[in-house]
Image (tube, helix red, strand yellow):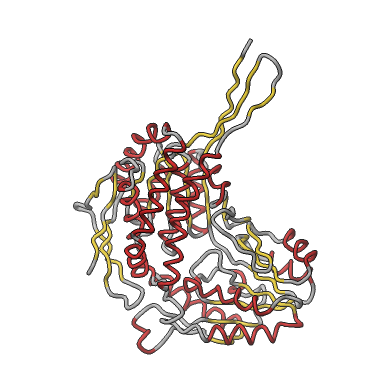
Length: 471
């Protein structure tokens, strides 16, 4: 059945009327799965106006009351887990197990921010007798949120939970290719008790919806997740209005492996390039290996990659454009002289009806090659070798991106020394576990600001200083 998706504005489904609709094809066999309303500036105006009208009452609610409503959203998400999993798997192509985990993470965001908002407070400043000074954290008002196609539910939940907890109202523009679970989440928020107008969704393409949303005079903060190219446009538009942005952009993250590392665990880490078919900005897509263990580790990683059979243990590419992009990078890698160890083609046979590619490993990758520098956003691992610690750091930092990095070594002093010199917003040493509590964001072209953790809550607030004379 082809689902009809309309806008959600001020607590109501708003049909597209005379507007066009986009027919979205699924990643498994390219058959139609949804017709998505393509909104425009008029829909943006309606949504922002609804959010503006709801902003004061929502901000005035006690943090504990907002927190309880967010906890109710978390409970409702878990109760309706299978419904959300089914829709997102159909739209993105993710493995069911991956999406079940993603659903729990989405619920965790609402639970976490619903609780931690009670710890959001200011400070007093001693100016001496006669003056009392204090700071307070206040919401911005209307927040514009633009989310990507690769993780629609978790990305929407991550920003939405923090923004709502801080007292903001939100207008979300999800990707037109994967809008289903975002629309469901907005409706679920209202069913859980969040007032109408606090969460609004406008569907459509970037130029027609995203641009007008960022430019709208009532929008006071923009949170964007997506490509560097689009992120720069968003930042430029926001800068003209002097409003802040939270930008989570691309990555070409390095996983640095020294000869004394636990190679069994390194193999598992390298295989995370297959999670979501590599369509994740935090993917550790460059494997930098010390010469002494390079050949042995490469052989083991390649063998495990071959076992990730497309359609069984590897998801398809979500969009047609992304499928074509990965295929193009196979040609680019060959032209640049990278050695293909396994993969390097689209999947054939019965899987050719869908957007499947083979899990791929390239060796002998040097910094001059495009697959070393550019984000492929697929199950493609670029393997390079290094001799010394200094060379490893230089290779890892040889990128315009700086989102995530990994370090593997049995020497704790070296682990900390290398981690301190890597230009990345998040460094994972020997497989350290991250969570919703750990701030996430990038250095360099990987973005501005931080999502996740208490730090995100601070980014969705603005600081006010009040000084009272007691003389």
